[in-house]
Image (tube, rainbow, N blue to C red; front, side, top):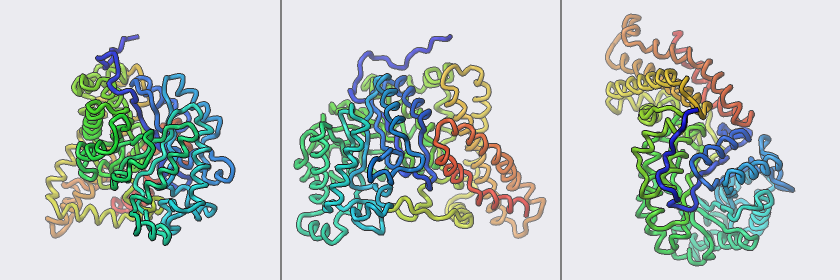
Length: 533
C-alpha cells in the first residue's frame, strides 16, 4: 500500500469550528432534487474526517422524521428515527459534531403546503414564510425546535435559519406592525422569540446574517449568545464580501460570526458541474477573513438548487478542510498539486485544471431553478418546453458572436473528451475513493453529451444564417446532425449508468425524480425528431 502524504502543513487549526453542510432543501416526493441516503451520509462523514472537518450542518426539511401532528411534513423517503440516531453515532465516532438546521420563518414551503399549518402562513397563496405575529406560528416553531432537539440531544447548537424572509409585513396584522415599527423590528422580535426558546432548551442558536443585517440597529436586541452564519458566495449578486462583513462587525463581535462560503449554489454553473476555481476562490476569501478577525469558525454551505449532484462538492469539501485548518499558511498551489494524490492515491497534479476545463453551464443542462415559476414558491415548477429552450439558444446565438461561441463550445467538448481519456488511463492507479473517481468519469461524459447537443443546435443556426438553402451536403459539411446523433447514442447508456451509480447514494424515489429532470424525455424525443427529419 502506497503512503499518501497529507496536504496539511501545520499541526494546529486556524479555525476551531471547521464545517460542511448537507442540505435537503427543496427535496420532496414530487420534486427533482436529491440528496444523500444513509450510505451517502456515511461517505460524506468519511470525506469530512479525512479533511479534518469537525462540524456538519444538516438542513433536513421534509426528510426529517417529524413526530406527532407534524408527521405529515415528512416525505415518503424521510429518514427513520433510528437512521438519524445511527447518523449521530457515525459522526461522533469521527469526531464530527452535527448541527441540525430547522427553518423557523422563511423557506417553509415544505410545511405550508399542508393544510394543517396554513394558519401559520404570512400569505397562503405563496408558501414561503410563516406569519411572525401568529400564535399558531409560535406554537409550531417551538414544536419544531423540540422535535429537532429530541433526535440531536448532544449537539450544543441549533441553526434556526432566518434567511431570505421576503414576505415580512404582508398580512394585515403584520403590515400594520411594519408601518409603525418597521419590517426589521418585525423580524427581530420573532427571531428573538425563537432564539430565546432555543437557549431555554440548552442550545446555542445560529441564524443566517442577511435579513438581520438589513436593519442592523435591531440586532443588539438578540441575546448575545446568538451566532450569525455569514454567507456570501463571491459573485456580484451578493455584493462585496469584506464590505458586508464590515457592516456585520459593527454590531456583532467576531467570535459570534461563522463564515459561510458556498460549494454549490449559483445557477450560472449549470446542473452538471460547478467551477472549482470559482468555488475555491470564494472559500479562500471567506476563510482568510474569518481567520483574520478571529471568527468562531467557517461552515461551507452546499445548496442543491442548481441540481448539480452532491458528489460534485467533494473537491470544495477537501479545500474547505485544508484552508480552514491552515489559515494563513494555506497554499492553493500545494492543495491543487496534491489533490489527486490525497483523494485517489496517485500523482495527477493536472486534475484540478481538468475539472476547471469542463465546468460551466450549457444551454440544455441549465440549473434546475430555471423552471421555477417564482422565487417565492420554489415548489411551483413549469413544464419543460423544448421550443422555449430552443428560442433561448437562438437569441443567445444571434445576440452575440455565434461563431466564437461555437469555437468555445467545441474546445470545451474536446477538453471533456481528453479528460475522459485521462481518467481511463489512470483508472488502474486509483487506490482510494473509487466511487468518487467513477462519478468524475460519468460527469465528464455527461458534459460531452450535453455539449454535443448544444453544438449541434448552434451549428444548425449557423447554417440557416449563412445559407439560403440547406442541402444534405451542407448538413453533412457542418456536422450538426453528427453531433446530435452522437449525443442521442450516449443518452440511454448514460442514464442507466447514472441510475446504477446513484442508487447506492440517493433515496430511490428522489433519484427517479432527479433522473427525469436531468434526462428530459421531451428533450430526447425532440432531438430524435430533429435528427430524423
